[in-house]
Length: 125
Image (cartoon, rainbow, N blue to C red; front, side, top):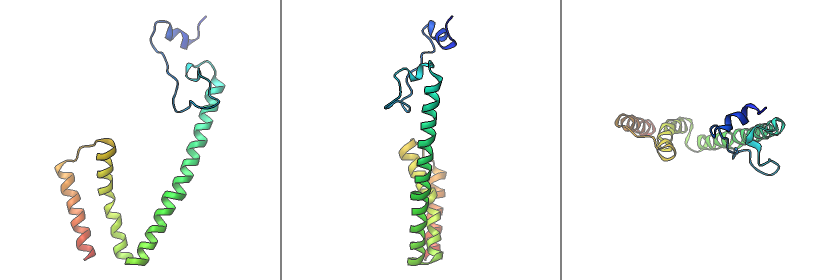
């Protein structure tokens, strides 16, 4: 008797491809075929460990580095002007959305961004 996965593949439908994120040294070629549950769990544990490492890297490098730079900015230009940097986050979000996700930039988005930049300029003056 065929397993559920083999039965799905009997008609040529439901074929699975190897998961490229789990492929690598020590991962069997038939990893994605559903034949060995223990191997799949091992890959999931590896993926969880890699995720945990990257979370630590982001916490220390990105967040910690940003705070160090922010405090250096406070020391250099003062607290009031340093806080204006937070108002630039929407500009970066719009730019990254357009560059990496091909999101459209609408007229109201541009108008809102202009208001934010004008307000930041006036507050800094």
